[in-house]
Image (cartoon, rainbow, N blue to C red; front, side, top):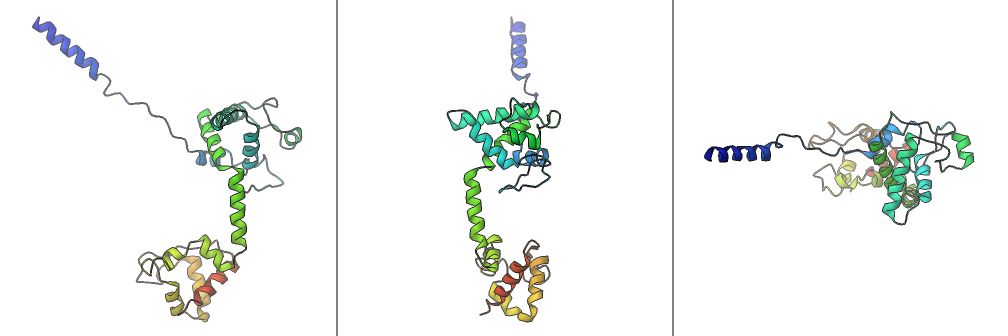
Length: 238
């Protein structure tokens, strides 16, 4: 009896712990933003606002998403999202004129999208579709255009201060992160205007020894913005 009981205990223990060494299945994370750039950008323009080119292969992603969102059936937002995702997965892998929501003229202009079977998976398309829904939105576009118009109305130096958030280091930092604008103005004169511009464009490494973290290079400024911010900095002399 003791022998039977001992063997039974071992059997139960074996059954309980037999799965401990198995690897648990995990759901793979799909990065919609990375995937849309990798899988879609060669044909669809991804910009907001969308850019239209004479030689474009397909409509901009913003246009595709906004129109598909309007055409999707469903009573609730979640239902429409599910239908949107399902349509993208079905159409991209097996496109047809019968499935397409495009008007006749658009299909004539771009032609029927070739099947992407083998280039993208159903799961990847799900991530792409959900990212597109969140990103390409009319309200976001209007807000973005409003902000762009607000910045365009600013003086060039104001544009730089706003877009690059210069005050974080040169005003709010109280001279601890980077030199204050007044300190920079005190060091240079109008004859050093090109020196200031060069530091902005190429970074400030080696120019301010007391600061261990140099300012990064800002090579994307327009000539007007660069000239404007350099002159404005000099005007901050106390």
